[in-house]
Image (cartoon, rainbow, N blue to C red):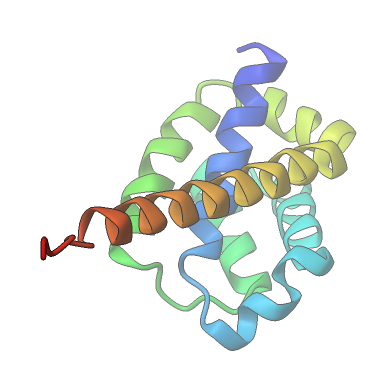
Length: 129
């Protein structure tokens, strides 16, 4: 796997974890909790399933959301192709990877806002006089 593929896989894992959090838990997620959870999980696990379970425990996620479960399964398949490679990549680059995820989060927000504004504009009907 290339470093970009490991980055993409880990960003996908971050979003899968985030989508399983409650609104209260989201407050600290981007403030360092995700960095610690993934770093700890990668360093102390032997495979993707164990790493995802550890990250969930660190984030106090008892059960992933249905959408997150599918994403976690897909991510685990990629990570398990070379678990030690992924864990080493995370150890070297986790701050950068979280920065990538934060940038993607902002892009997703902007896209949603644009789509919402576009939909509202489409629903506006001009009435001829």
